[in-house]
Image (cartoon, rainbow, N blue to C red; front, side):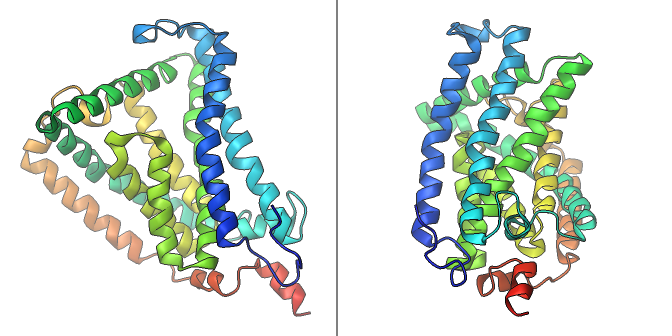
Amino acid sequence: MNFTDDSKQRRHPGLFDTALVLLSVLAVYPIAGSLLTVLVTGGVSLGEGFRGLTGPVVSKLLAAQALGQIAVLALPVFWLVSRFSGGGLFGRATLGWLGIGKQGGVRLALMAGAGMLLLQPALYSIVELQTLLLPYLGMLGKTLASEQAMLDQFLRILAGDASIGGSILSALVLVLTPAFCEELFFRGYIQKSLAVNLNPRRAVLFTGVVFALFHMEWFNFAPLTLLGWYIGYIYLKSDNLLVPAIAHGTNNLAALVLLKTGVDSGGGATDAASGVIGYWPWWVLVAVSLFLFFLLIRSFPVRPALQDADNPMPREASLKSHS
């Protein structure tokens, strides 16, 4: 794959290159995950109810998941961007194009995390409503419920170690690693690449859908897509990768806390909805949280991030080219 014949004329990947990278990662990631799972479990059959997931195996699975995300999602992005940025693998131009290490991101990151917390009641309500609709979908509903119940059980086991070491490991793997690796790939590379080739706002919409598809959680496809759109929007506004990473990590942390406390979002796809959506105070909470969310979104500074479509080079590289 050759992104550029003249690094001075071309500072971003083409549309075909971006599509090829996306399809390759979507194909390779589940295969790599399956191979790593077989390696760390030593071929042990997990069996019904994941009885084979003992403490040491769980730790190995968590480590394998982190390794897979770093190897398949994160490291290739640095290499790909370095090919057309003109910088080294972790050079200033490469990091700048991705939106890493830019000034002024802490305040926006905190705002993004707060926005994610404000979205949680609405997202929870969507999952609850879906749970109520599943019995009306026949076999499709039963299949979705069964798949989600199995995933919930698997995640509960991964997050279930109550020891300090186990809690730190699960937080690193289930919260921080995907927050940075997935954002590096989906927002830092895919969305940014699509924005400079097509339309920045369409790039947000498309990347949000692909982000949801990547997780292969069909029961949670709608909430994951909404999350992807929100995260993509704040990256578009900030052009600072710390902002979507903190928002993503906040959502993961909220999910981990629910798992640790024995509460599933939606109460588990195979169970009846928890009943909270049947009470009007809950919907008042949802309305208030959404109102505050939109106020927060409107308060995001209007940074000329849309100029990335016309000037995809990092600001430092652009200044050098004009000096």
